[in-house]
Image (tube, rainbow, N blue to C red):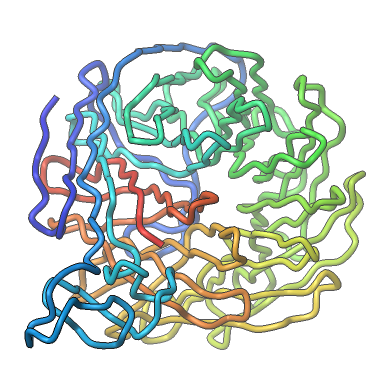
Length: 483
């Protein structure tokens, strides 16, 4: 394994880990855009359920040095000890916004919000793309990241890794389907026992994609695996994300090929033991591709689905649907951007009042896209909307969303500056006020992506995605950030 220091960080290190056993291939993508922001489909296969598992026990986390409190430094005018939070920028203070609040751009220790506390990149060591798509944290602070890594055969294998709170790797599980195509994990959820639900799709023996749900325990051992096809023969199914409700049921969302034409949104509910409770499909009035990307469960068991619906003369519209516990559609809302270009909802979060927070991106005339963040109440009424074109107005997008214990939203995605896309992390209050926004460039040509975020009870932000650090193609990226 090779490590490379990161000169772009005020503290901490960037670990570049080679997987050794993995080899070269092409990166898959399932979020609806290519490197330029254009709409693309997914590749892969279907059928069967061959599962290959490699479990390695090691402690290879790269741990950065946490910033120390700066509140005891001497004032530069000799007038006594510096006071962090007094609004004066004293010696050794990086920032001072006049308060001792965290998560508002300058934290209580006078360091900026969003500083990297620890980070790691994971690469196959090959020319293919390696990318993280989902992250979740258990009650003890252990965190799980899912995604894919390139293989020597030219495709991708699904990848799951469980980390200790300090970033040491407990184990890694790989998934290879029966077909020769790509096998990708695109979302992850943890239940109350810490069991891991990794979801995505695998390449089937008939060259189509199978939807995939794989449950493993806290040691990485399989509990059950479900691989399933679309309704029509030799058709593809892709699972994009997962939610675990308070009863331990597993709800997955994605899309499958329609028996008529195009694709339909797919929603499926499993019991904790893997028994299928029900499956629902949604197809819009126009023949085209309708896709589900994000899912969230309310305290009462209702379900929100975020995705896209194809509408004639309007291309892809953002789509949000609310379902009851039995899978009945209660209401839906569609949004067409001002330019009537492709618009996507990618992620959804829910609060204790059943309000839904959705994020995605809209196509624009002069830029590839702009981020879109919106709050709906439980009846589907718009509360507020936030849009962002980037600091230099060159374009930005949202690919994932996390909700903090204080109700704030953390949006991750990408932002273009000087034609190079960096990973974007942006914190917004429940009322729609932007608290801070930061870019995380990999240091090479890019593009770099943030794909998912999770915020633990202490306020630490966990993000995953992919960075181009200049060693091969993009490498899977996981980081812990300050509030």
